[in-house]
Length: 228
Image (cartoon, rainbow, N blue to C red; front, side, top):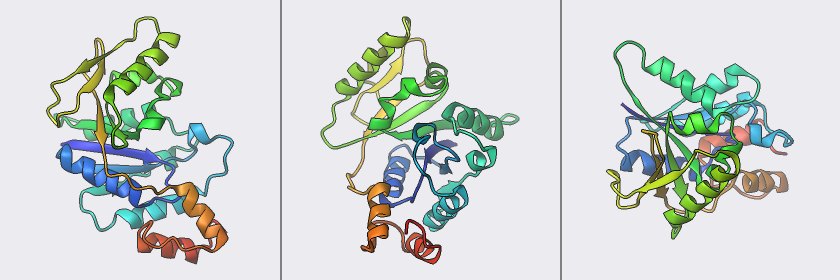
């Protein structure tokens, strides 16, 4: 199976998350996309994050109607900081028991991916998992290539990226670390200018959030008086 992994705070989940996941699943012919709400996102240590139970419930409600989407509780149940390397290893061990072999793709936005070398065990992660990096219209792969090589050079002497123009999933080139069998796939998805931060601000101000996120999620927010 081809399995997409979509991690995030999902505070709250919205149509931007869902649309990106659906478009990527179609392009990469994925059998499943697993949404994984983080318990404590390492990059948001100083920010107030809504209780994990509420974020998990909203993610479940948002994905119910899509048979290809599922939700995992592994980071919520793990407690502590939610590190991608731990999640990928746990999923691989869980899905690849016995003779089953599955292909995993971690889905992340380009701005977050530029900071990959601040993640826990980032080099080991890049050499053990494929990444799908969602970009904005007009974004150039060469820009990401240069950013990654510059960032790697500052921390790791032997880590260098290369461009591979033989991408089986599209015309856009893919990237990889020399010596790795895993790839980074920059993918342009439909630009929906929606953010969880703006949704929280709108709810707090009494403004409408209709058509920014699924109706079930909107109802859950109102019922539980979140973001007030």
